[in-house]
Image (cartoon, rainbow, N blue to C red; front, side, top):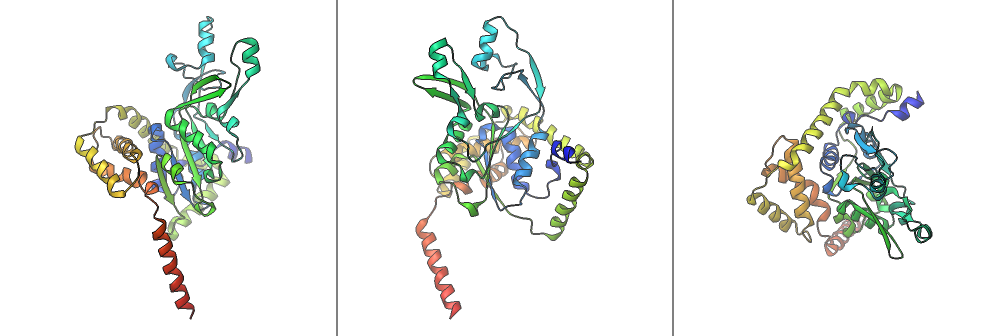
Length: 346
């Protein structure tokens, strides 16, 4: 029974509540250019469960067999250096189908472990590049999951977010460089009680949701029942949710194919810009992310045009973590609370 439980993750469709979190995850799968999602919440709110379950919903992908960079055999223009070298040498690439992978980044990961390393001596001696792929290579075309992202070294977080935004990872050493595609869905989770990210890093996450434990007793009872059923028989439990899981998968596939057809009126663009200005956010990243999110949301509703309701949904996910911090307001609030506490103690 333990072996079965390790092979079968908890069903995404079986997660009770947390609709905003599930929506943000699905939107990023449909459109990886959203630059990821940060999930902030207390312990035990299904953050990790949802991320690991998400991969099971995604359709299988074709990869070049044996390629450490997860190359797509149907995309010859974007093959890695090694795959192109094989073709140039007259060799034929073989492919295989596999599930989308969830690659987890350990908190202790160094920059070299993340981006990969280059054997400079081999390059100088043999005249060819020898690369030790990093985590960003393994995550290409998959999901990169960073639990407790707020505890990572800031420089490592910068590297992750740069790669998520650009879709490319570059390894450089002594003037020699090597680049490969690194397009992935970035998902970070954290407990705010253990410290927050710097505002500059928060802004780099496309979407952000804050979740908490369910407050309705009936919902909490349902969580208990479902978890107990899963632990008793994972295979049987998973089977109960197959139909609903298949519906989610089909909707993701349909929305992904529909995204390129979505059109946006200028009035929608003005509405997006106005919301960012009213929120007082810095820069233009919020506008761009809101547009992408609104277009993606439209596809989930079966439409190829963006409506005002799509912008409202997008704003809830793209704006809150970008609001300017007001330290003097915080100090004033703290002082007021302290005064009230002193009065109540007298």
